[in-house]
Image (tube, rainbow, N blue to C red; front, side, top):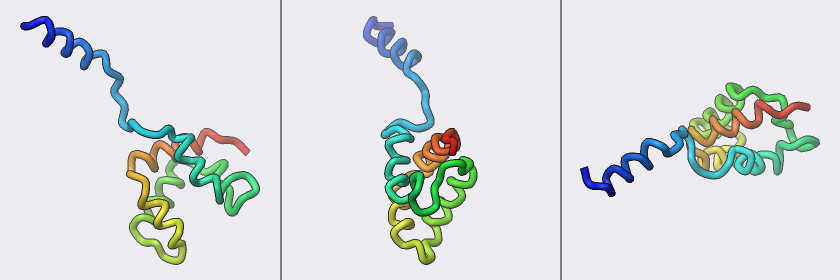
Length: 93
């Protein structure tokens, strides 16, 4: 095997594996906290990851009356929503 191939194979083996790579969950959640922060409309603090994922996924599928929320939800991938849910679930009131 050529030395460059060995080097590349080693780098790939050492690369961290993550399900999500992009903006941090905290940074994405700050989008939510503009309206849903402490003292805002329906605080998300104390919400479980499962609850947040279910709510955001429903908004993506069936916007209903929350049209602005549907537009925001559609801007996030499923992996991003899951990451935000995990982060928000760690926050305490």
